Image (cartoon, rainbow, N blue to C red; front, side, top):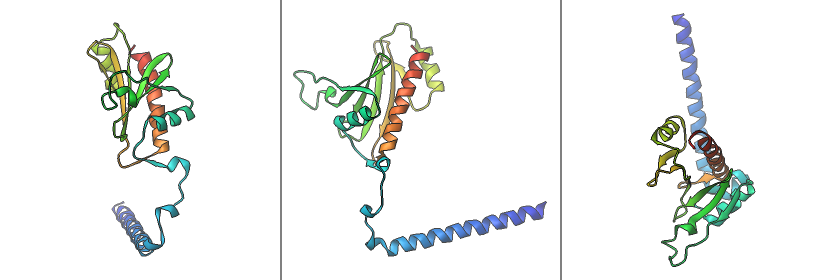
Length: 182
């Protein structure tokens, strides 16, 4: 048995060395041909489009293409563009509830946010959600109303498919949250 383990370990070592050698050869080949290639030479599919920042119009287009009920938030009167958060909001209707997608001021992140007026929810309900849920957080706001939030950071770039996946996660999580917390 001991002999068999040594032989397997030896074979694994050879396999790892072979993979390492292959990686070095590929790297040398790419480096040698780097002047011949540009990023335009690498084919991207639609879902591989890299997004490192966005805005409301782009997000609205993505969300409508996914079939979501979404509209631009109405600007507030008397506020300048930097003070008016509504200029970065998309209103998303999910099962009769209002949720928002907030695009950060520099466009480098997205936040899903929904607050629901409810006097029946307490800290135990929210804590139970937070102990079981992934990818989201829930809390009671200053008025005691339950809130659910999720974030997606775009810095460094994400694919369009990742943004779509984030939206599906928001939709699914909100539905589960509304059934178990509200």
